[in-house]
Amino acid sequence: MEKICIVCPKGCRLSISQDGDKINVSGNFCPRGVKYAEQEILDPRRVVTAVAPTDSESQPFLAVRTPDMVAKAKIPGILTKIYALRLKAPIPAGTVVLENCDGEGTPVITCMDLD
Amino acid sequence: MKRNEYDVAVIGAGAAGLAAAAVTAKAGASTVVIDRDVRPGGVLNQCIHNGFGLHYFKEELTGPEYAARMIRKATEAGAIFRIGSSVMEISPAQADGRRALTLYSKESGVEIILAKAVILAMGCRERTRGNLATPGSRCAGIYTAGLAQRMLNVEGKLPGTSAVIVGSGDIGLIMARRLTWSGIPVKAAVEIQPKPAGLARNIAQCLEDFGIPLYLSTAVTKISGKDRVESVTIAPLDDPTAERVIECDTILYSVGLIPENELSRKAGVVLDPKTNGPVVEEGVYETTEKGIFACGNVLHVHGLADQASEEAERCAESALRSIGMR
Ligand SMILES: Cc1cc2nc3c(=O)[nH]c(=O)nc-3n(C[C@H](O)[C@H](O)[C@H](O)COP(=O)(O)OP(=O)(O)OC[C@H]3O[C@@H](n4cnc5c(N)ncnc54)[C@H](O)[C@@H]3O)c2cc1C
Ligand code: SF4
Image 1 (cartoon, chains in turn cyan, yellow):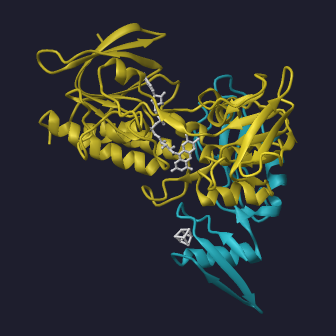
Image 2 (cartoon, rainbow over the protein chains, first blue to last red):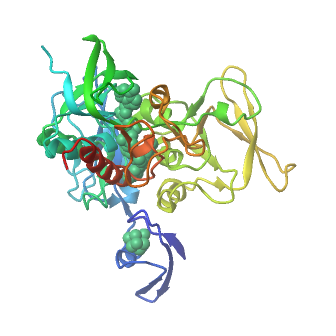
Image 3 (cartoon, chains in turn green, purple):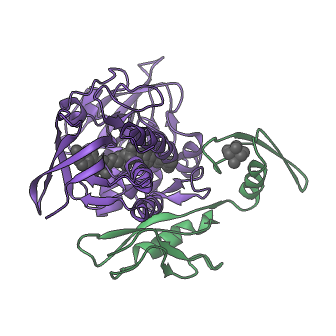
């Protein structure tokens, strides 16, 4: 299987093959590529970034993210929860606005100040 | 009275301008950073995706988070911010070598700022469909990818209900994921070149993750629709008869960026007809106008904010030398 490593902008083209329990990876420039390939085969994960509605007139939407990657399959549900938020100003950057969005303890946090 | 004389004036508070201002202010040069937008950060504020700062901060940040760090750096170094102010004009060098910048803001009207060195960091703008002349209807629903990004991420407005991306620049790819995650299906990305323009990681995580087809070596031959886009017609370059009609009400153009140099041109700065950025001395970043320097996307388009910031730091060092502060 061919996969592009998304860990850094270099974007190495990984060749991945499975040999029983063992996952063989080639084409990676650095070890992070191997970790990515294994993760991608066993449990693909992504960071979620989106905007959440607020009650502010000057900033009607605010950038939010999951600080860590979440299981890909959970992303649509997480987005629905984010779009249903109504953030009330003021909120500093880095504030948790959704606790445990994925059932595994990952929060959603703000990426900028809501003044 | 407002202080209006500085050692260094930086025009633009994006990744480049902020990095430059942090360096000059830290070196003890009185520094003003001017931006016409409502907040500093430049294009970073609308780039809510992660992928910034891996090199510079050794962390993967979103655009707004990257901006916040750069703003803090410049503020802590002592740079003064003038936000909501446009620079309208840069004067020729006066007898003492300084230049006068004409600023306009809603609050204060027209003001003059004097500076010994000027750093241009005005970023870039997007190429539009007009630059490309696609045949077909001139109906609503056609946007540049960056404009759609701003609508969606800053104003929260959905641009339509189904989309096709024309071009494969990074902004278009990022927007394919953004639209999909906003409930707007993206039917295809169409690129006339044999290779995608954007980063491989963006092809993977913004198209392949969602099964969005990427048609390479393929041209848009027609856009149809009365008031609003109804479909686009595409055809492979090697077989123009194999046309395919894709229904959608929104088209995003992601066909490249051009340095924003109206102001520089008016100031007499000579531009390179190939890059559309100022001609600068290699490694010195000084334009053909003495005391006017340039860095970031206004000089040439950078794929990564880290590169724009690092270039800006070198440019700032050079500006400091020119005024005897290094
Ligand atoms: C949509 C998009 C996605 C990107 N994605 C990534 C990514 O994932 N990772 C990454 O590392 N990089 C990415 N980049 C690249 C990176 O963001 C840019 O290269 C970098 O931020 C550019 O910084 P800048 O300071 O040169 O320009 P800008 O951020 O454009 O700043 C220019 C500023 O100048 C101001 N200005 C212009 N003219 C005037 C005037 N006359 N008076 C006053 N102010 C003025 C503008 O208001 C603006 O704030 C992306 C770029 C874009 C456009
Ligand atoms: S393998 Fe290493 S160098 Fe290559 S894209 Fe992945 S992280 Fe980057």
